[in-house]
Amino acid sequence: MNRKLLLLSLIFAVARLQAKAGDSHNWKTDKKAFASAEVDPRVYPKILNTLDAQSITVQESEFKLKVEELTGVREVRLNGEVARIVERGSDRGRQLARQWLEQEYKALGFVVSQHNYGRGANFIAEKKGSSGKVLILSSHMDSMSNAGANDDGTGTIANLLIAKALAGTSYKHTLRIIAFDNEEQGLVGSAAYVKTLDKSQLIGNIQMEMMGTNSRKDGKFHLIDCDRKDSQFMTSAIMQSVQSFSLPLTRVKACTDRSDHGSFWKANMPSVVISENFFGGDGDQCYHEKCDIVDARLDFKYSSTITQAVGNAVAKLLN
Ligand SMILES: [Zn+2]
Image (cartoon, rainbow, N blue to C red; front, side, top):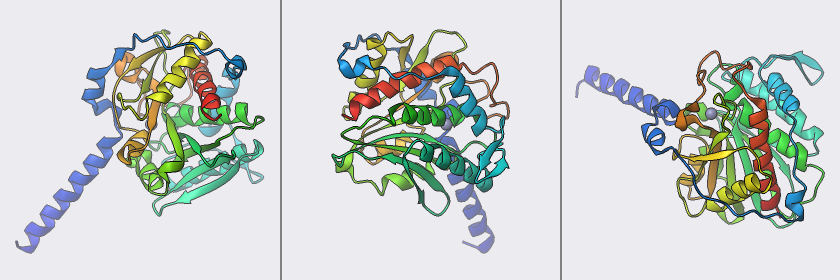
């Protein structure tokens, strides 16, 4: 092959790789997932024990306020300096977001750290249990260089509010909360992270994706396990929480691996992902667009209800 041809084919190969990576996180292009969306008719058993009776509460107003802090609507104080986190695509924006998360989780008494993997860094906050087993609650902290209020500001704040609700109670197992980096680049942060994980210590992973749009006010949401046997116990725990507390939520099944839960599945580890009813006809019109900001299209009551459902399930899974 002559040099010119070699160069051309190299450029072509790189462009193809980039297209693939860019596509791997794009829910809009996941035709199979759209085709698979259907309302789950299953009735999950109610389990009203004492733990269930202490339902965690999540305030809609607090949910909104925290998303506003994470997306530059409100100023934040980082190490005594005033800052605005207007985007989470650049190195600087993601660094500010990690700093803010560090401050928030430290205030709740969590032990914070970072997992650096070269191209980026995952943020980790932990509340230790005694068993040596770990439940991972995750989201992605990066955005498409936009405010990313819904994607994935809502998932990231949901986890912060679950942490707050559970901070004062002791649990048998460790709760580890991770805000993955570079999800939008093709699940880069989570793929690097699962390589460091010991499967025998992992109970499972719950990934919290965009959960802000409920435009039809029907409370439909995705809880996705793609019928994986190793992951269905988390679906059951969350749906039991929905039914025990009569939360106004309806599960719509669909199957996609295009968020950080996909990295866990690839490594053969149990995982589920939660989101708004994206594939069932209620996806965010501002998905991956500049208009993904805090405005009236986001229903924080709905986001708080999903957070409550997951938070109660997490409390149960930690014991
Ligand atoms: Zn996302």
